[in-house]
Image 1 (tube, rainbow, N blue to C red):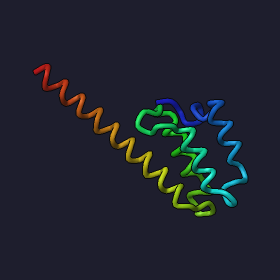
Image 2: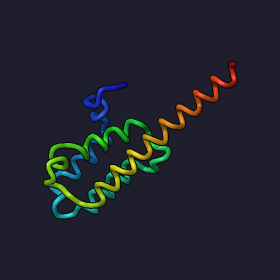
Image 3: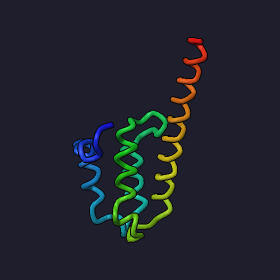
Image 4: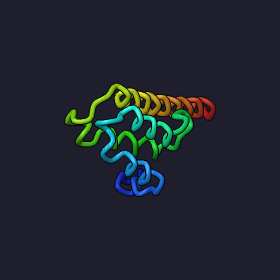
Length: 102
């Protein structure tokens, strides 16, 4: 698995991240919408994007409660649920494969 410090170098992510600087306090809904736009359809988005956004939303300002809004928790929950869904799907595929080769 690629290090988070490497995947966050993505130029598209850096543009989004910079656009959010200093805006969370005044307009958290807009900021959340920018993150959702970056992610796109959560069911089909790249795993790296899920990691990037979850890492961002669990950073210091969010973890310490300086930046709060329900939309933040909603995005975190969506990402967690999607990662869980993908893990279960992967496990089911492996299980099915093992049954086929027996």
